[in-house]
Every structure is written in C-alpha cells, then in structure tokens.
Image (cartoon, rainbow, N blue to C red; front, side):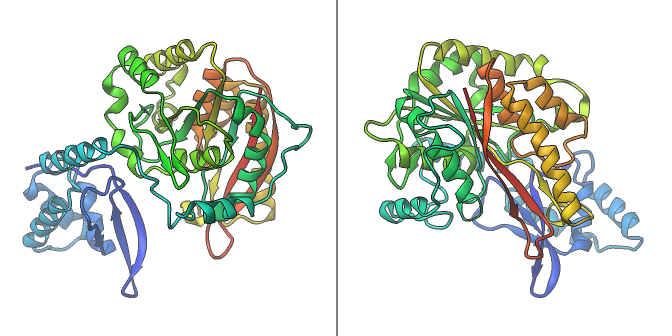
Amino acid sequence: MTPSLRPLDFQPVIYQGQQMYWLRDPLELTDYQIILPPALAGMLMFFDGQRNLDAIHRAFCNYVGDLVDYELVAEAVARLDEACLLDNDRAWQAQEKQLATYRAQPFRPPALAGHGYAADPLALAQELAAYGGQTAVNGTANWQGRALISPHIDYGRGGAVYAQVWRAATTALNEADLILIFGTDHNGSSGKITLTRLPYATPFGVLPTDAALVADLAAAVGDDLFTEELHHRREHSAELSAVWAHYLRAGDLCPVVPILCGSFHEFVQSGRHPEHDPHLNQFIARLRELTAGRRVLAVASVDFAHMGPAFGDQFGLDRARRAALKESDARLFAAINEGDHGRFYAEIAQVQDQNRICGFSSIYLLLRYLEQTSGQTVAYAHCPADDDNQSLVSIGGLLLL
C-alpha cells in the first residue's frame, strides 16, 4: 500500500482552543471529516503514492527529528482511508455511488438555499429586491447585449453588484432563448470543462436545461465533460447567477446550461497557453456552432482578486494596496470590455496569477465563445474577507455586446 491523498482543501481552524488543520473534502464523500494537529498534519506531505507505510514512517521520523510510534502512522492511514480521503478504490466507489445518486434526481437542488439565501421564494424575492439596482446604468436602459459578468460571492457582501448588473441586463435576459453560465469550478481539474444533464432548481422552481445541446456537446467532445459532474452538486458559482436569472426572468423560462470551468493554474505554471489546448478549442468551437442563430445570454459567474492574510498573503490590504488592486482590476476590465481574451490572459499569467483571480478560466472561455465583443463596467466593489478588514475579494459587474 502506497497511500496518496485525494485533492483536499487544507484549512487552519481553532479546535478546542488549539490550532488544527481541517482536511476538507470538497466532494464530501463521507458525512464526517478529519481535523489534525499541525505536527501530525506534516506527515501528509509523504502521502505521495510512492511510499509504503514503512517509508512514510521513516520519512516522518526524519522530518520531526524524533522517533514516532509506528502505530500512530498506521492509525492515521486507517482513519484517512475510512474518511475516503485517500485516492484508492474505497474513495472511487464512494464517489461512483454518490454520482449515481446525484444523477437519479429529477433536478439539481439548490445547495445554498436556507443558509446562503432564503429558501422561501417570497422571502428570497424580498431579499433580492432589497439589494436595489437600477434598470438603467450608464446608458444601459433596454440593454440588449450578449453577455454579462456577475459575481459569485455571497449575496450578503455582493448583493448590490449583483443587483446592478442583473437589473441592467433584464431586457436581454427576457429576450434570450438560451442562457449559458460559465461558472468557476473551485474544485475542478486544470483546464477541465464540466457539464451536467440535470436542470438546476432554485427556490422559485426548476430552470429547464437544454438536454439536446448537452448531448450534442458530449457527442462532439466526449464523455470527459462528465467525469467531474459531481462537482455540480455543491458548486455555488453557477447557482448564485441562476437564482438571479430565475428571479428576473418574466414569463416562460428559457433553458439554462451551467458550464463549470476548472483552474488555469497548470497553464500558468507550465507556460502552455489554453489557446493551444485541443480539448478547450473543440468545446468552444462546437458550442459556437450549436448555438449559432439563437438569442443567447452568456454569463460568467466569477469573482476577481482574493488578497490578504485570509488567502495566504503575508500582508494586509492597506490603502495603497487597495488602490494598486483597483488599478490592476481596471486593466483586466479594460481587456474584457475590448473583447481581448489574449490580453486578459496575459495580464494574469505574467504575474503568475498573484491576485488569485477566481474567474480566470470562466472569463477567458466566455470571451473565446463571444469572439468579437465590446462592453462596459457597471459596478465594482471590494468585499471584506476577514474580521480585521485586512483581506478582501474584488468583484465586478460588466455588460458585453
């Protein structure tokens, strides 16, 4: 046995007054998860799939500079295995079982209803209405463009920006016969595009999907589009835009197709450009072909920078850093509003995505889909991300023709 960890999110937490690490499983394959003290968490760096238990024990003893009880290592492996945190048959079987359960549903239930926003439709409508927003922003009355950039941060922090951009897009929303939501897949593999055959539900009801379009894309690109379909179950990015689309759409509903977009980290690190990725190129080309002639409203459900101690930076966001971030975001917005996907990518890649743009792939692929476009920024905000107001998330609302 040479154990290796599945992709996990290591989060520092305070548990019973002590600093610990929470091994958060994004797929939640079990109904419990594991918390480890820092000293023991250090052992996990040796779970690389190349070492057996004896080798892990030796490496960990060398790492801590002391003799560690062998049974401690063996017990840790057993507990990680039981929690389906190891990349092995047990975890794969649990994932297949949960995927089958997900696919057997008539629709994808709203994951955040009741704790991210109101689950009751009347209360939710009142909540969204309270965020305000004007139907005419900077000359956007009766705007009839093709795409918008919306946040996916929680409504409590981003509600005013959501309201401003979605209300400005109301005419285009109600004239669309198809809505495509390019959402950030926070747990997606690098360069991965993931679809689902299930329609998304919101507290207002079930949004129809375009099953034929999804099937045609799968026929052209392959079933690789569904290998990470379980991510749709918990991913909030597409859901938070779907709620606004459902709320503001008058009359008959049109199909909504959520498209989850994985990280571009590997492209940035390797220097390989997504413009030369055959899988991404095939998907975008086929999506254009299959939607040609339709009244499509394309949405990138994204946030922008994530900066400060809450995200691993060794500095807080003082006035000067906030001003610099605003300038950096303005350059990204300018590239988006000019429809320049190459410049948008270069702006982020040349600084190794140091601002952690949580919409990098979604916006890039949206611009590739639109081909030629121009737009305008209608809203921008910095949202606090810690109690000390030293960390923030930047968000924006943009309309593209």
